Image (cartoon, rainbow, N blue to C red; front, side, top):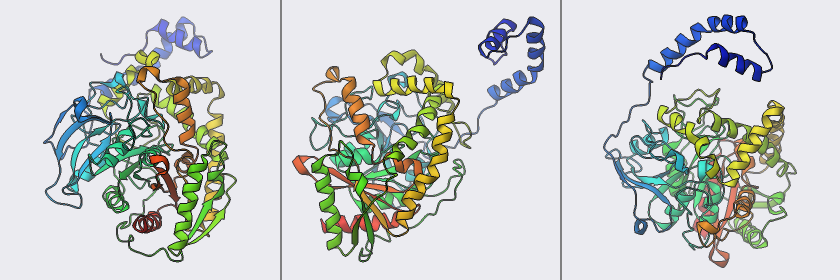
Length: 499
């Protein structure tokens, strides 16, 4: 239906809602003044969009049967071959189901989006295909990617590859589970609060959230442009570094306001860690709900770096836990606005899928079915409208202080070391019908208390397994200066090889 301006009475109703009543004459005059906008918006409606070309059109897909999907981690399986040669040739890769894959179903964890098929590939998908990868499918993610557990996707639970009675972590749930299960070689996740590193920690994978802006976000459903990250999830540090080499670099379609510093991440792997300075972040072990088992495992891992020749010492950053409040102030209102606008992020020089934007308009029709964590975002976001963005502004103004707190320590340390998640994977309910709101909320708050700060500041952070007490993984996180991913990979590879 072509765009048209409101009629006189509708305009008067809108004006009254804004506290600016209009009489009939004023409404008629304003409608006349608005006529050029009607013509302009009708032009926008009629003109075909300029969208990225699909370079590898040969593709097929099918929805897996239950026996093909024992962990509940696949959304759709695909066969999309890339270039005949390249650094990823022979690798089968999966992508989180908030990334656009042209002509392939996308559900973003939410049933109301069933039937959506984006028109183009995300930039990271194209880069992997250019490097010779085969896209083997799309992995289940949590409902609109807003949870750190693996219980909220409309398709059901994603199960831990080490013990299916436990959570895989989220929101990149399926990506981590399938990599660790050996069903794919590599996968991509996204991270706004820890959603690459949390499932890497709980499932036992290597997950990197690189410096903000190093990996393009074009063609990926986002929540807040200054905190949206795509990251590689793999079983080994070497594969992670290789995949980041393929992904990294600026994108003409994705302007994030900084020039990424791209390096060879595989070249640094064999460099010794002798003399590296690693600061064990005291506050990362001191949350009231921190598991003593996790703390002991990560501290033991830190001691192993001493044996490798690194200088390991304990450091303190008191701003670490207040950083959660800063992150919260930066994400809550933008997440609400992303819902209201169909995933369109204003003030971002980006390209959008018309199919995705149109499909997202239906979220309110299914609002009664959203999980409790998203309901909290909806209610809190709507409530926060009365404050006119002042808390977002306060958080934005405190962010430089949080960055400085980490940067000052990283002037004397090469890396920070701390637990990725403060607990091991939580046990799943016996069935989706037994899932409670309390379970969802517990996983929501327990998973991201050490990870979300680095989404706000943009520092690179990697989670890797450092032990298996009780048969479940523990994740250790390494954090570096912006664009110093080589330092992280150097230390992580040495630790992995020594183990």
